[in-house]
Length: 247
Ligand code: PGA
Image 1 (cartoon, rainbow, N blue to C red):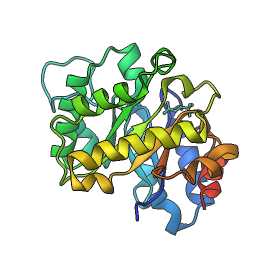
Image 2 (tube, rainbow, N blue to C red):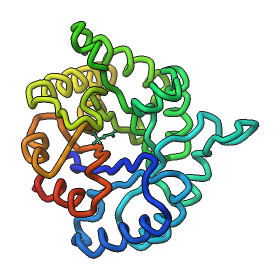
Image 3 (cartoon, rainbow, N blue to C red):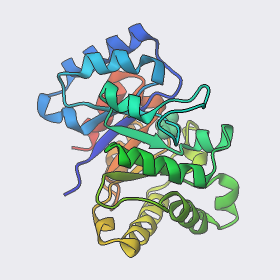
């Protein structure tokens, strides 16, 4: 049984005070036994604050990004090694905003997966097609190519997650239909199983306008093992509401 996870991607939101406040309210609102179902990806500069607040809890936190090398002459980048030292246990890789705005290519993402796994952090590879690609009937070929290239050096003995986020559903309020989600997740599952028996139990998360109101239906779709939540993860009530809808 794959543990259902609700992962909040805060993107470039929340100050230090807001981070502290969010963590305190979250821990007060959820049962201790539920904590490990929650994961938070804060902006790097507030990660220390979040780590302090979550230190005695089972809520997981991770980086939104890291560089493909642990250290060196890479001005402005963040080190996965340092994330680990700070208490992170996961890292997002290749979120569509990283791909589109920062031009991150699949080969770079494959190197990040390798480094993150080598440090025993969970690697969460984000994939998904644009609206243009969907309209052109390229959903499967885009997913296939992003998985093939991004997982080129994946270590199946270590943890990793695939987050399927159709780009047109991110931050738009437009959620993919249950059928679209089911089809994409089934395709990802088959792909993963084809390359390793471990692919059977690799968590596959859905992301793109997940809200308390649509979480129940989405969580019941086969091969949806968690959510990557942007906007709705910024409010504790919505974040917790999404998790509660999955129960
Ligand atoms: P959204 O973002 O929930 O605001 O659509 C999802 C994401 O970008 O991970």
